[in-house]
Image 1 (cartoon, one colour):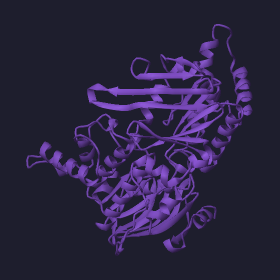
Image 2 (image 1 turned 180 degrees about the vertical axis):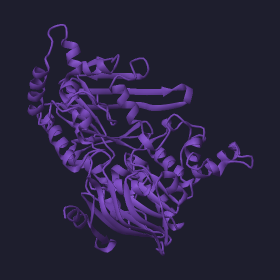
Image 3 (image 1 turned 45 degrees about the vertical axis):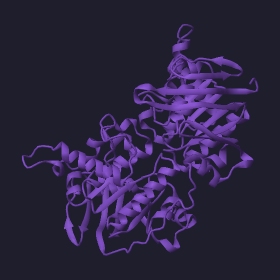
Image 4 (image 1 turned 90 degrees about the horizontal axis):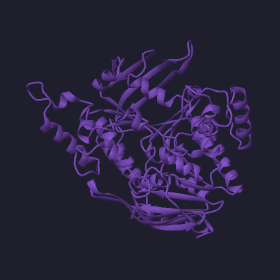
Length: 507
């Protein structure tokens, strides 16, 4: 036991009121200077385990024991866990937007050191610069955080955790919002920590990251440890089978759908930047979409993919375009206009602008089209609410005891299905999918892919954005490549490879 930086023995976590055992007799360990991957489907118990390691669930609220460097530890809070050597970086961005980088990194330290001395801003910036340079963070200590990109904020959270000099650093889905360059920077930082003897628990849904970065991987399923493999034992098919409890022979299911006539034509779409005058974030983009077609939008971060489909959904006031649906010109100046013309969207961030997390499945599904559930008196019908929400729960295989379950209590994959159900409730002919499998496990991904194929088979047309090129290649019939807000290439499926798509992104 003394050889392990961290060891968990028999960790069990129950939620008696819900009748759920989230973790059952979990045991694992982390060696000094080791990068341990932790993977599993949504609902496997990863988040619950991390809350125990981070002191959110304090001792007495779970069974079993934690040992840190051979001695038992019982964290009283997240701050207590941090002071005892466990650094934690959550998946959600959690920074103080109106403070500088230096203030964010050292705010907790200032509270600790306030009895000893005070810090002037210049001194704080110099201290932060030394720390950031030592750990190779390309961040400006004087920059105000609300001017930073999502990737920079993610790296800032890592820097803040490292500033406490942890013996163990837990990273929960740290690359979800990062560009490829930011991912490479983060991996370099993690490897440097490993070389200095810091242990890392790396939680991800991306198997490629497990294979590239980790020394061992522990797999959870249904709240239990299923297997642990050393790097020399890594096998993609075996790991996937352990995660989902079944063999997945083809992640991208075959589709045999006859693509029909042109349903959407967009000409000269230009979107003005809402924050910077006289600047376009999308410029002169034209494309078409056919019935039953899945059209992939390809591009690096900042290419204008999300902005293009957001304009189609009426999210921007200052844009111009000629848009025709089934050959008829249409005006889309609001989300209501888009829905009325048969367009709906699955947004990239389901928690921020896709769901009402503190409401139930039933209301989340029906809120996109309340007219559909009104009775003859113009009042909302509970019977129709139940009929519609239950229909989509069956259609999309949403796993929940009933439609009254709070969406916040669903796994990520089931939350994503609720967002899709909400979009489908408006009876769209055109569906805009922005990162439809972001932050969900491989089993849930395959279910989403099968749903997409079913929708295409029903004659719905789809525009799909994804940062994962294999996903786009596996699912799409044609590709539009955007770069710096402009259309730079259109590529047929037969010609599409990761190399050709990525090369086009740099045109």
